Amino acid sequence: MVVEVAKSRKSKSNSHAIQKQVFRLGEFFCGPGGLAFGANLAKVKKGRVEYSIEHEWASDYDSDSCQTFIDNICPDRPHSVIHHDVRTLDLTRLKKIDAFAYGFPCNDFSIVGEQKGFDGSFGPLYLHGVKVIDMFGPLFFVAENVGGLSSANEGKAFAKIISDLESAGKGYVTTTNLYKFEEYGVPQKRHRIIVVGMRSDLGVMFKVPKPTTGHNPIAVRTALENPPIPHSASNNELTKQSKTVVERLKFTKPGENAWTANLPEHLKLNVKGAKLSQIYRRLDPDKPSYTITGSGGGGTHGYHWLENRALTSRERARIQTFPDNYVFHGSKESVRKQIGMAVPPLGVKIIFEAILKTLAGVDYPHVNASWSTQVNLFRGAYRD
Image (tube, rainbow, N blue to C red; front, top):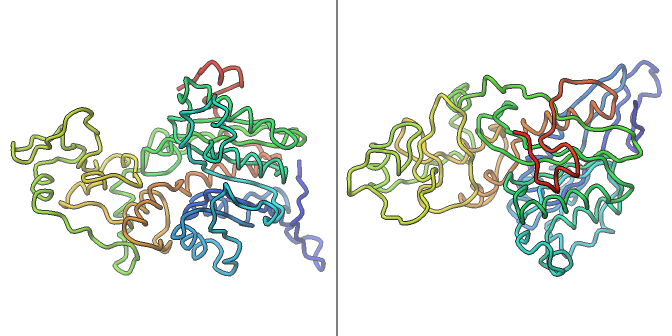
């Protein structure tokens, strides 16, 4: 199957030249560009046809993220990135697209079922992506969210979201999976739900690509030391640690945290209630990193297994599979947020390549999706 799209290129002077089928990508909540960078890396060839994805437009409410996106994804087209709140964005400003992607926030899922939850100005933001799909009818879409989404409102919110996505536009066949990115070449235990929708009239269904590093994940030591981060790399400033933090880390072994380490009494944390496992937790150099987060107070920055310090932003970016020349803009805390909220580009590259293979009619190794049918979604069924 060869999908004809608006942006098809072929040399007129050479009938044997490679024909390029380019799918134009629009994004909401684009962040610093994890999805876009992964999409740009995806390339598939079938015969003399090369399939690829290119940025068309993107939007985010955070100005630093927009600047990061522009400088790394589309420096020659800065106006294609719109710094705006999607709730008031004029969709008629947007150019036609063949593909759509968004990692929608989940702020208001706690009120799903109430009328204001879906219709109010602060309702679930995923609906603004549904509006884009309604308007442009892209050939495919990719929607990303945290793993906990599946249990919101006893699974009802999750099922409602999938139902709305499937019925958007001309209708879509969806494949919903919990991706464990350490199984896809990412040196980090980062688990995300990703919904891939293929337009129904294409007559194809996306299949979950088979993990590439399922039994041999990349250790964080390999990610950070092979090769070493260049001294000239940006966003690599050290965070000044207090004397107490340094002392606490001296008593914390690789893989341990503030609760499991054998700390002297004066270094223990005086915290009641939940004891978060990532508080002052050192990385285990021989395993993938635990999830890199974008926010949090003291003790949540991620800590080196050998040196008594927090990770630098560049080290976090490496763990997220951003290249060393990917420059993040803003304050140190802004950069931390951008990196922690992003999707690992080398992980989603595999997903986008599988989408291109689906469109091109190229078979690839695949596995069963976590959620197989809409019925199972409503029942909360899940295969691990």
